[in-house]
Length: 269
Ligand SMILES: NC(=O)c1ccc[n+]([C@@H]2O[C@H](COP(=O)([O-])OP(=O)(O)OC[C@H]3O[C@@H](n4cnc5c(N)ncnc54)[C@H](OP(=O)(O)O)[C@@H]3O)[C@@H](O)[C@H]2O)c1
Image (cartoon, rainbow, N blue to C red; front, side, top):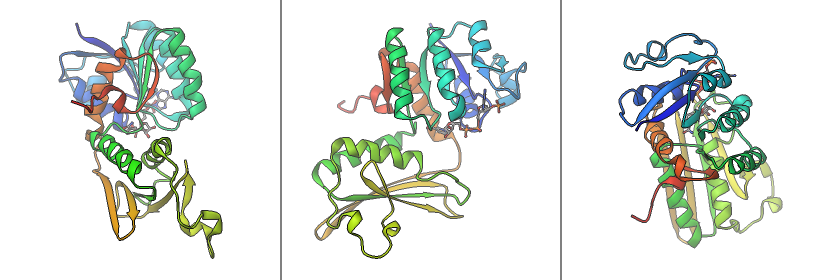
């Protein structure tokens, strides 16, 4: 039996790539899309995937009133994401969240609702498998090396800093240990800002220049040796598809809020 999916943000940069991929897999049925601009239309026509027989609705409430769905995918904007997630839980769906920008407090609130309803919410800041591996490798390195700094590179018109990927990396490393800089930040002589922003105890330096797409680099330093782990994204949304499909397939094995794709990846095998 196919898993019935409702995709909010189905016409966006990331959502449309996921919708096109779902047109080609037999075990997932995309039964409803959400987009205000294309409401009333056919998603297949909008995203250029004629095999998708899937209507588009203006809101999540309308889409879920019209279709029974097992998994709801949230891929819109931070300002509407939380209410979309709560609406989906109220309709009995498990939820996969790709939208960035929700705070820890939001997820704590969502977790209570999800557990009350015996449903799962899997929130993944970056679905790319190579990013998940960078996170895992960095966590392993942080167990052994107490000093690191993160550099986040992006195109010149990216307005937010640091990137979601850099933030998530810092948050994960803070659960391993706090870095131990030789000179504490508040003892910097000269310009403190030159040492970057302190986020979840890590120093992050954000570079915004033409010529970059999105990259994240973490440098671990030890006396007379250095380890650099770096991730580079291309310009398409293709890298996020496989991880999102995996999350949709496995979210129902969980209960409550889980953060990160590794919640459904088995790294021991
Ligand atoms: N987790 C990951 O790996 C990953 C990867 C890529 C992007 N993202 C995140 O995913 C989110 C979407 O990114 P994107 O680049 O795809 O954005 P985008 O191209 O602007 O697409 C946004 C989509 O959401 C819909 N939308 C926006 N506001 C809405 C509302 N109020 N009600 C219903 N639909 C609404 C838009 O359609 P209408 O405007 O027609 O309503 C559109 O379909 C962002 O938060 C981004 O950071 C995460």
